[in-house]
Length: 493
Image 1 (cartoon, one colour):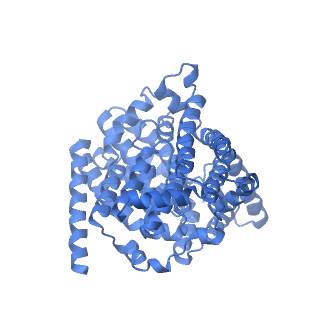
Image 2 (tube, rainbow, N blue to C red; image 1 turned 45 degrees about the vertical axis):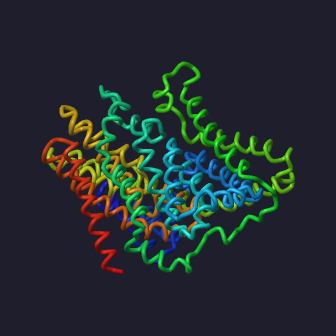
């Protein structure tokens, strides 16, 4: 079963069960258990030992992300308890007067926070929840807007943690500059570009369809996660008590990215971002922001010292759901990784050994990347596998290499969007504080609509050998899809 088609079975089991039962924790556990049992030929004791060995390894390797989540949860609890979020909501109710303005404000904030998708998902949700709640925007819709701006913006931003990951994915001995290849692939990342256009269309036209429409019509039945552990407001914070910590968080995280990348030791700016430790930078930035918030709140008695300290436990509790799902998703990814079931080896053998014509390579890479990201829940792992293959196969054709790298990045983001075990999907749910499975179900039809249009573009780019013709074809396909959506919506009324 190792390195074969059967390696795909555990994530498929987890995903299907999650969609059917709506119980994410149990579904992930069953997926993990099935993978470990398959690896050890159904020897129960060995499988159990492997599960917890992988879990310990993954948690250790990703502890910076978990610490960042806890620190950000504490910061959110502090801002909420201080009354700053309430003050911001009252101010925004005057400045942002319509539902459409609230949604566009969410998009703009997501675009501004382009350096890291984790940071984007949680920060945008924290700041915009009070505003969107005022305008009766459901948490599922907020989660979609957050998710549709987080990874798509990061994957087309030259200075971001994603650009660094792409640049480091080139095969050893490659004479191509990773950053230059990333820049050339941006116009050919059809899914990311079209997603941003499609999101703007949905807001301007005020149209929803499929699962999102059903959810919006039954908004009064919405389950809001924060109701389970609501943070009491005991302070008298003002709008600046929300804005200043968020601005400081953004500035400090960017500063620490430059620091860990060696910028202050003479490393060029682009190279510093490419070489930085984004996870460690987020931890350092969020910790420094807590110190800043203490200095901002305590002397002015925005919060009492006891209430400030009490927010630590409340912030941790608010993030336990996201942390639990992330740990299980990482464990499932580990079970399917190269050291165990080796799903990557199966994909590499299937793609790398193929003699498929260049004309179908872009769409094939897009679909395989989508499927792999969907099954494993990791975008970075997906393009880490497929980019070296595409660069090796197409080293003599720079245009098609750029198109195929764009297709891989696009497929990775799309698969990430529709996968229940994706970390950014999980964090978007946490940022919006809605049920995770509701976000997955409502976002999937929108993501697949854009994916279909992107596929048309990749088919055209392969046939013509020109990625810009493919971009035009994808844009026309999206325009037709939007026309159909508008006509169908009018008939439905």
